[in-house]
Image (tube, rainbow, N blue to C red; front, top):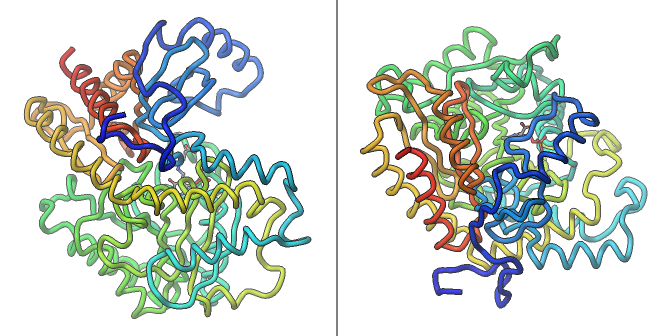
Length: 454
Ligand code: PLZ
């Protein structure tokens, strides 16, 4: 290891060689065989970005059934922030699995659940008194946040934004903006959901400088005129939009929306499912503009890949719901709670917030330089280790989803796992594990550059 490398747990070396190694076509013969079995067993509604079948993963690499070692710029969609199979996570989960795997917290509780909630209460933005409870997925967390907001306010309307993504359950699919593939044919949708304009700097008609205040003013006017401020239970927003294409709201937008919520008695719900746990170079993305949400939803990065999600909110809001009104069989499963405790230690001891910032400092200038040479790159954006480029037809802002898919394919073929995103399918997004060795991060950027040069 060089001094630029990062060990997932202080003092441990990576278990797998941290290298890009392409030994077959991607996907290779073994993966293609498995894909045939899958097609006969799994409905096509469940997709896979890249059907290489994974046999091992560690640090910044994913190894497939054909022996290819891919650089991971996806982290399982912002989940394995501390690295895949992080040794501390693996060890704590294994130890717990040898003791008890489940009691159901609603039947007979255990300490690790409480410890995770204590940490969420301490670490999420704001130093007010908080309560947390645990569920299984991001969608379940958002859905519960809305239930609690409606209960606490006695109001029904929920405000969301263009390009937003909040999940695939009936309510959260309704909150999600994009029709294909998330909503098409799955209606009718849940009632009392209202969508407002988003401060999307690159696409704001009067330019990025005006975007924050103008978008906030438009959203607030529409809320006031169309719904009535006093009917709004919650405004649900991602502090950087994930599936929507890493849209970083223009400065001033989130503070203005939060202020509107304070004045009107609506609850500000920050969906930090994709942005949380050091991903953006802050522990939570809301910290960037000093936003203190009433409720925060977390998932993904919280437990290194074990299914866990959290709902954290002001004590006076959370404590309103009657006894037994919240829960679920697996919520806060003991294996997932142990994983979360390990993840939080890794973030702190490994300096992963700073590490995410450093990743952004390396990626952004390289990609901006690339954008200078390739006019198809219309925008370079993001914070920390949540970085994206938006691809357009030359000389216009017209989205180019075909080129985006082609660049992603070229990266995949060369052993770099990248993801796409965006309402128009024209965003390449990069979410490396925060523990990726710097050398591998640079090599990944070389692969992206080569994909454009072809
Ligand atoms: N809120 C902000 O990013 C999940 C979705 C992948 P779940 N994003 C990845 C897919 O195509 O299903 C997400 C998110 C934000 C909520 C969710 C939902 O989290 O754990 O997937 O339910």
